[in-house]
Length: 351
Image (cartoon, rainbow, N blue to C red):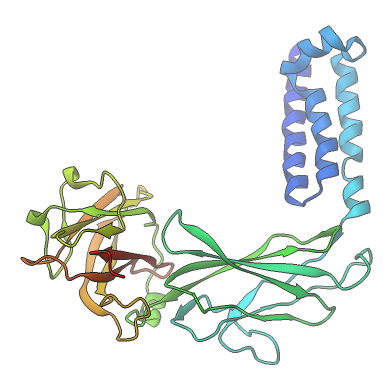
């Protein structure tokens, strides 16, 4: 009997934990707190605590019954305090038609504008008084693990009318972006509504990428450091040895550097396939506004096995080293599901 009760406790504990996580995701903190009480009542390791300090709850059967009652009533605060407003999937495009993006375009070549439209579904009867407000948050990721918030826009939701916003692109750079809708109105729950898009340089053919197959190859980290001149090339990235792994990550180099190592880590898989990785190294002529346009120094494609953990390339500056100025590095797999990784590098600390 004891074994059976312990099994029931663990089973119900797992169920109650799932409810707690679900309520938190739905932003119903009161319901999550009530469900957490059930977790505490059920958790077998707490048996000794009840026996020592709460004698009236010593019985496992009693605690299981109480926990079931608590779980039964835990959803009530959600229904009484939170109205649920859902949206159709977010759509992005360069130019909406009749106030709505007909398709969700997720890749752009240096766009002049990107518009977002979100269509609210039928308004619930328990919606708080007044027109609900939502926040549209935009975050930018130039490379893995480097995500920054670039804008937070507010919008009023009107029944039967799509939300339409023009995203701020004044400082938009090459990389990937995430757009998330969340409620501003108190007692309003909006299920997680998000979409992503990416901005690419003009040298990329998006139609070509769309025609390719997706790949499991994913770059999880990129770092740059002083490389070995013996492995350097001015025309193509050269594969370096394991000893050349970057000990630290540098984005600014002295004027006398002769080679730069590009160290990439991958989320390796057991796939035996190979994915082409494109690496572009450009000289921006020390001009942060790119008014004269970047000069492509290296534009190379290297096949990468999908089961590889990492790879190191070395970029060479020739006998005289690299000219003083600002450079950028663009890396992406040539696949349908590619996103660009972008980094700027300064040599000689240009002003």
